[in-house]
Each structure stands twice: as structure tokens, then as C-alpha cells.
Length: 145
Image 1 (cartoon, rainbow, N blue to C red):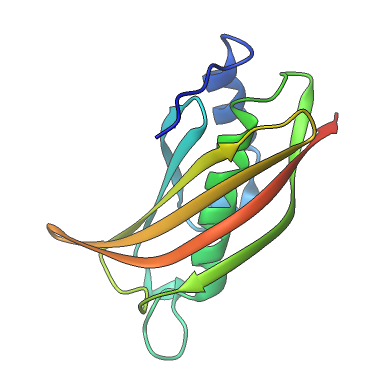
Image 2 (cartoon, helix red, strand yellow):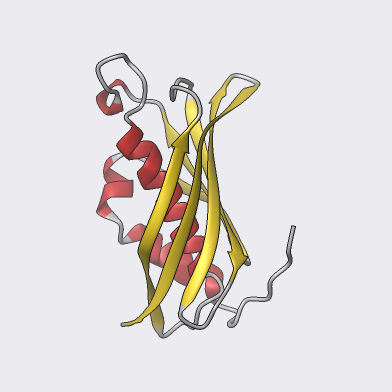
């Protein structure tokens, strides 16, 4: 895995603050559990309120947590005066999202001044079992704030 250097020493606080402003993440009880240069982890606990018709966590929510993980992973390597937005992404769902909680990990593959390429994965955690449920390839852009 590639090692990156953050552009400022306050990147963890900046990233955590940005995450705290995401009302969707608060609404679904998602929490950011790890922030490293070029990598962010977000956990989502299972809730019946978040399921689709078969009792699995809805794909839209799985996509939301991994999109945020990728976006904030990119943001760890951006200037503090910028913001981050998603330009595009592709998601493959590998298994139904069934578990006690879900872990989204976003990682920077190639940082850039404007565009940053990331990949992400979501695992379902059920006790000690981990099962990969989704993979994402994403492009993020730095924006002026």
C-alpha cells in the first residue's frame, strides 16, 4: 500500500470536522473510526430502519458510507482551504449487506492537485466474520470553499 504525506498537520481535525457536518451520516449513526493520510474508515451499525425489502442494509446506504470514506480519504491529502466533492464512482455489490455492522474503507490510489482517484470497500461484520459486500472506484475533486 502506498504511503502519503498530508499537506497540513491539522488534517485529522479538519477531516473529522467535515464529517461532523454530514447530516446523512449523523442520521444513520455512521461514525468515522480512523483517519490516516490517504485512508479513512467509517462504521455503520445495523438498524432495521436502514433495510430494504429483504432485510439487508439498503445499497444506497452502503454506497453512501463508502463514498464518504473515499471522499474524506482524498480530503486528508488536500489543502485545508479546499473542500472535496465526488466527480464520479462505480460500485460493485458482491454480497447482500447482512451483518451487525459495516466497515467502509476509502483509500487514495493517486492524489492530484484537482482530481484524486480512490478505491473503497465495504465489509459486513457479523461477530468475528468479515464478508466483503461492495467495492468502489471513485474520482474526487478539490473545490474552493
